[in-house]
Image 1: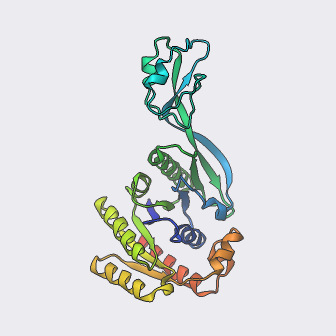
Image 2: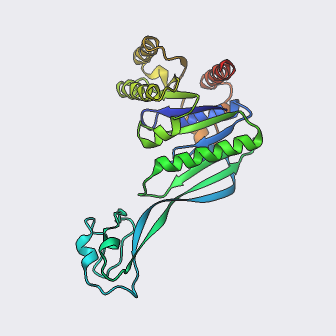
Image 3: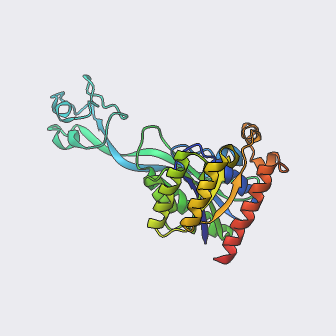
Length: 290
């Protein structure tokens, strides 16, 4: 099974817009949004949730009122000031260290697994399965939630007899990105022609190489700084990273987003849509070569 994950060194490069267009152009695939901190591919795909599952990670403390003697030991042990004067634990402030649970002389603290997110399995108007997840505000373990999302996407792809998975990855190079790219067939890096864009591109390419994942590049908004776009192309040549194409800036993309559509669906004849179709053909060629 071939998996392509679309990533970027930072947010705002147009990664999800690229994935939305590829979702329209590439057929017979499952789709997954691994940006669990800000999953927004669903805004374009119009999915229908058919299955959902809680994601449990870590533990948090809870004081059992009928057992509590209000001795104050838990408050003395807590280094996060998560326990109020009334001996109520703030679940947001609690870091799950367990000190209050282990040191409470009255065994009045429960230390329980916590639901920190939710995973959704969906179908879409095109018939392609789609999986995404949402990590609740302030929660952690996003890398594990990404793994859960990818696992369910593979299950859906196998069940439907699909050989391709198209993934909208998270930005950056942290744990969620590592969980998104490991074991994939291609890391498709979306960058922009700025100084920070080049820097972030280099970081993502280095990360992919560390995990022995082939990478390729798309330059978004390439015409806003042609000289910088040329520098990115030279970087790709020097480092033997395929450049799949350049996407020109077009404010119509924002209009398409407001309508909840991919640009290739909203305005199929404008230059950026034509460039996206050429890129999708190169990606399909990659599938055939593997």
